[in-house]
Image (cartoon, rainbow, N blue to C red):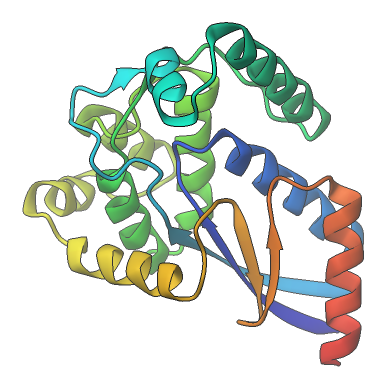
Length: 213
């Protein structure tokens, strides 16, 4: 049995990251127990200069990608369909938020063995429920919900702890050529990009495990 190291480079603000994570996890279920995985979540910010008050999602996407409301609506419908296929329910999202504090809390959660649970909670809070994943009260609520110590989480958020570590990790992945997410890096050398269907992830995992054996 081969254990693969999987770095899932993503942003809480990225809808395709929600699709990609659920798709990858379905693939991991299919290949188990032949292939085991150590899953690590790595930070990436789609909008690092976003102010705390956020921005209207339609205005933001239109300005960044140069597409109109009708195309945005079609893209969101496609996302809802792809999400449903892998068990993720997209809800209304009216604003785009800054996610740096979410990444700091995810870094800390990884040290506590609760990173995956918190990642799922953050994706659902934003993409499913339309909540602000950068808001202090939301982050503390989600930390408690996944079994993390709330007072310790509060200290992390209030102190600015792990900011340097998050920025260093972001810079490292960008230097490695990661400029879009989700990007899935297996054993530090195999790259799969985008919210691929489970079958694509499954085939890749089996092939890589065979090569690494």
